[in-house]
Amino acid sequence: MLRKSIIGLRYLAALLCFSLPAFAVDVTVTAASVVPSAKAIYNHGTCGGTITVGQAIYQDVSGTTYTLKAANIQAVGGSVAAARVVGIAVSGCAVNQEATFVTSDPDFTPGGTVAAGTVYTGGSAAGTIAPAADLATGDFTNVIGIGKANNKMYLKPFAGNTAHN
Image 1: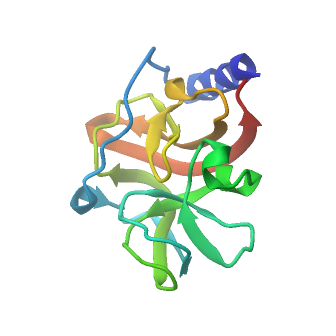
Image 2: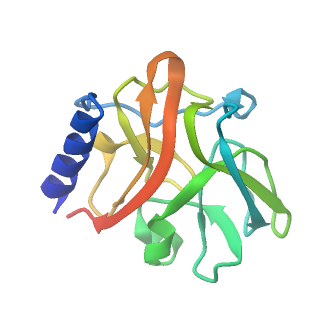
């Protein structure tokens, strides 16, 4: 299953004329450096937990709140919905406050170092962004975006929701 998912990600990257590196580390986000472009598409909703700017979020199974996304399904109670990133937070919030997040942006600055051509997914720790090469057993495939030059990212989350073995 993992091999098929990685092959699928490599195929996606090849279609976009990119390639995956052998290994990379999670993106270390500096909240003040997260900058959407003028082409960003935003969404809003109710915060279901504490969220910091630059963290990957998902809509919980109730469909009413947004909280931190984790690739490891067990980290959020075993819900497949938890593997579906909907965007990157561009405002911090606490429970029951408004969450603002970017759902798509062809020139997004994620606030940390990203490698051109690298496919990024939700990391194993809640709210993190990690290279697809770092997915581990139990993680769910959920592409967040693809790294571009100058620490930019083509942000367009979509869920594969396939668990890695």
